[in-house]
Image 1 (cartoon, rainbow, N blue to C red):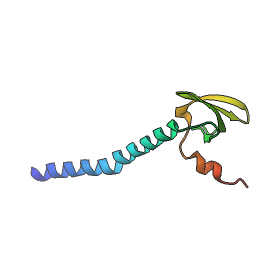
Image 2 (image 1 turned 90 degrees about the vertical axis):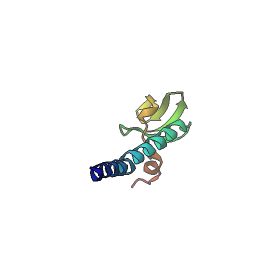
Image 3 (image 1 turned 135 degrees about the vertical axis):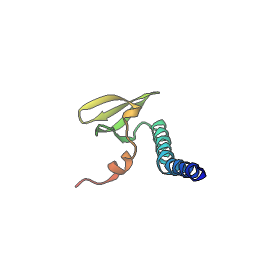
Image 4 (image 1 turned 180 degrees about the vertical axis):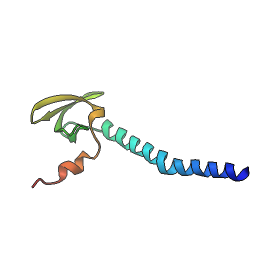
Length: 90
């Protein structure tokens, strides 16, 4: 009986450290990234649209892209766009 309880607790601890904790860390980083968006930043949306931020509101941003201007919710911006945009095109 005691071995079963110990194994169950051990499985829950492993599950927490390998699944839940890293996901919480990613969400925290993404929230911080979106809170620190500023005018002039280059971003990529979750739909793959590349643009430059023209205006930042509380929950939305206005970006300029090739097809014109788009107003998007901040949650539509993906993290890690700086590394994608910094790579030179061939």
